[in-house]
Amino acid sequence: MEILPLNAYVYNQNKVDIKDVIAPPYDVIDSKYQQDLYERSKYNIVRLILSKEEDKYGSAKRDFENWKNENILIKTQKPSIFYIIQKYTNEKGKKIERKGFIARNKIEDFSTKKILPHEFTMGGPKQDRLNLVTATGAFFSQIFMVYNDKTQTIEKMVQKYLDKAPYMQVTDDLGVENLVYLIDDVDDIKIIQKTLEDKTLLIADGHHRYETSMNYSKLHPENEEAKYVMSYFTNAADENLIIYPTHRIVEKDFSKEEILSAVKKHYDIVELNDKEEFLDCIEKENKKQITTGLIIKNDNKFYVLKLKKDEEKKVNSAPSLQKLDLMVLHELILKGELGFKNEELMAQNGIKYEKKEEVSFNAINQGASAVFIMAYPKMEDIINISSAGERMPQKSTYFYPKLLSGIVINPLI
Image (cartoon, rainbow, N blue to C red; front, side, top):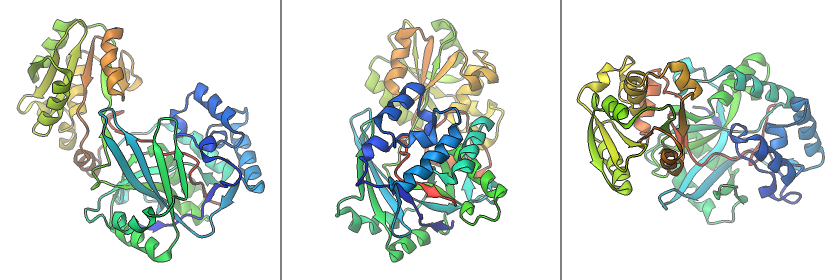
């Protein structure tokens, strides 16, 4: 994979406080949060990535140009790569430090198998992002890419940078601390380029943004800058790269007997009384066979569901997808036994997809019939599915923390 440093625009820290101008990705910002970010600063990046003006693309272009003219946004002195450490504490109280870097990569068609998608995309968001980059001539957010380097060459090289004060340091609204280090030494950049030159990339998040970059590049073949896209790269070999599950909350009305009757046809069931033992058991058993958790309304037990031998073969899909717990749950239980239509699952009609574990457990007390607690996804499964040219079910993976918008801007013109 061809990697290049960024001729980046960054916020001028002599003129703005970084915590006032950063924002999460546009697709997780609701209208209330959008207004909060607007009020935080007249230079907040939300005014570019998710303007609330009537002519949102025109206003983004105007603000982007004005901020450059006012030196609110300035160019880095040299082409640079931005190394980022994100520190946070997960729901179980464990301290995590996810590491990665922002650079540019050559845009590749999926047919080359150099870049692998793992989810389907929708047309609306792609057109919206294409309109924005066409108006502004810049990318404001990164694609989230995963590569695999067991030698951890880059992690070893950057240690010398971590002894110095970071170029940028900011804690986001979710309490994630972001430490940003600027790498502009030519020899160090070459080490990063050499490490990734033979690597395949998996798109972990940002499928819409990547396909937008492909479309923009095809529309502007004369633009050399448009042949590359800004991405964040993290190493699958790092234990700090954790993929979180997205749980399934069944909101349609089913009785306890109906739910248990459905799952008993396909799973062996272990009944437990302790929540922590339940969660530990799911992860332990999932290493050996497909395992899912279940809690039911008006019931004080926790059910560990272990898929019966060869049941996955009943799933009408590619072999790589038959090994995926969510695919089995969707096809055999939600659709096959409980009667959900595919359109209902896509639209989350009668079912809700929830990332937060505690919210999922509390849903039982708020009227949900049942909640399926999913095991942590395995990177190996995602890579195998993507390498086979398949895509995973909707909302299969959740990569946390989200990457901030406003750390780096990639101009194309």
